[in-house]
Amino acid sequence: MSRFFALRLWLDGLAAVLLVFGLSYWWLGNVAHELAGTLMFLLLIAHNVFNRRWYGNLPKTRREPRSLFNILVTGGLLLAMLALLATSILISNALASFLPPWGGFTVRQIHTVAAYWVLVIVAVHLGLRWPILMGLARVSFGIRGTSPIRTLILRAVTGAVAVHGVWSCLDLGLGMKLTMQMSLDWWNFEESVAGFFIHVGAIAGLVMSGTYYTMKLIDFARPGRRPSRDAQPVPTTVSP
Ligand code: HEM
Image (cartoon, protein in one colour):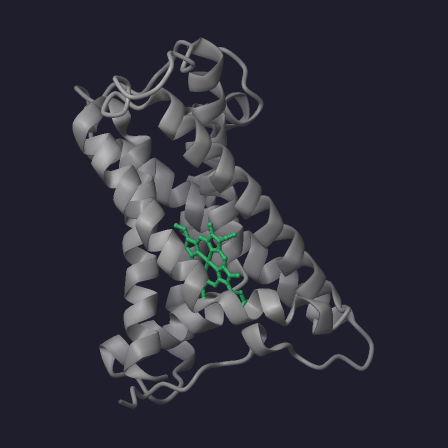
């Protein structure tokens, strides 16, 4: 793993953190929310510039389940992010004096629904790249060899996060948020701030691990399978 690629992964992590911060609007307040969102979009523009070759290689992509699913997810993510960006501009307080008053109630609703879809789709996007992220974790902690006990502990933690994630989906009313149903049960940040972030993290963990293990099953079930690039372990040393 090159130093530059490791830096890119840290920037991806920052974008993910900013996305989660953005969801806590009623804790951050408007100014911090708009700043976090703007920085996230700038990081995502850079992210797509770094990954521009992927778009160029699309016509040559192997027609196998993982690659086709990856294309579908990236396309969905692009649409959801564009919806989030367009509605952000329309309802922005900072831009309000420069734009016509188009940011009504419906636009705000589309903005919220797009934000929660982005959370879910980004988690799928990360689940598809889990070996890359594990590679970064190994580099960061200086881990080289394998250890059955460590694997067992990590799988147990993943299982616990996934179970918590199911509860978090119910507690945050994720289904209602994704289907644009009206709900009055907004998270009460005066009661707990950490609770909200734990719920969002657990939902992301549930979706990521669900994606990772589903893709593993699909790869395993394919006759004459050849693991794709994203399913392979990555080098665990950093080269300049
Ligand atoms: C917070 C949001 C996001 C996070 C955390 C994230 C994370 C990642 C990570 C870790 C990778 C692999 C390493 C890399 O190339 O940097 C990746 C690859 C990629 N991402 Fe994202 N991403 C996000 C949003 C997006 C968006 C909005 C798009 C546009 C649709 C996008 C398109 C891509 C593409 C095209 C690749 C390369 C795919 C491949 O090689 O298979 N990402 N992303």
